[in-house]
Length: 87
Picture: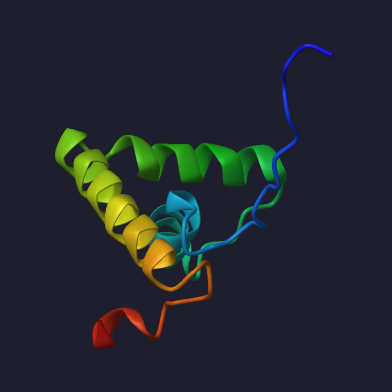
């Protein structure tokens, strides 16, 4: 009626989520061994770690994301984490 069509949405892929492939592993490694008594404490500790990163770090994440997106296209949307080195 309005000229819009339905498009299929690809399933979520950790290959393409910058938080999953870069941010979360860094935060997790820095919090290793630390105990947080409650969720706000964990959020505060995570935010403190993330705030330490600069613009170059953000740019590097973006560049990694572009590379991963291109690999996803090259592999027709298949999981490619282990295949990335072979192409």
